[in-house]
Length: 331
Image (tube, rainbow, N blue to C red; front, side, top):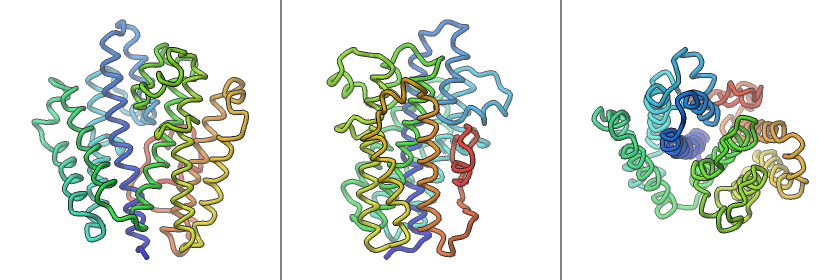
């Protein structure tokens, strides 16, 4: 069995690893695309990128003019931004430190390397001079962490909670990306940009060629059965892990039922018609339900007293994104 505090640390470590890589990838792709923007278009595009990352409200509070430099600093290294790449990497390292006796030493070394990379002033200075080199370095370390988890970590309860955390975070980020960058009225006209942000461009081209209708892109990101980065694939993996955990932890049965319902809704509902009718509401509903799933796991696995007040050491990006009480419960 695993201690509740260790399960919580690994659950959040999985979320923070996924968040660090996704935020870096989105900003990398957006920075490359911004080089082709007209001067009047750039500000609007940076605001849309911040919304896609769930950081729009937090950036608005800074009252700073959005451009490549200011957004880059906010997304990567602003100490006031709990959803920045640097903050996520620091929180990831702290959570791995808590469970050092439960995880392979290689995992601690890689998480520490990521943290030290983003604490090095010479490396952070590349954001202004060599940004794409910095993005590549961060992504390589994140991929090294993913490979270390896959190849060295025992398939025990700790691995299961880390895996569930990653799948919930990936699903949530994908849903928000589809809602803000694919289906929104002000969405980017080039779907290849969004597909690169989600690391799905090649898979989409193999299935759909250049059929770049927004609904086609949204459906692929949501329910492509053979893409490890679709929301449906993530929920299937989370469902399998929770099913195995629930054999030894009856308190996780509510989470198991909820993830099963979310998966079946995506798999069997007339999703394409729902997206065409009101994609914004359908995806916002999915985000709220994913937040509720994380809340349910936290309440039943990390809080033995089943307290109505959940406390974690981190704030999830996007809680000011209109998700309501379910997202707020992740604080």
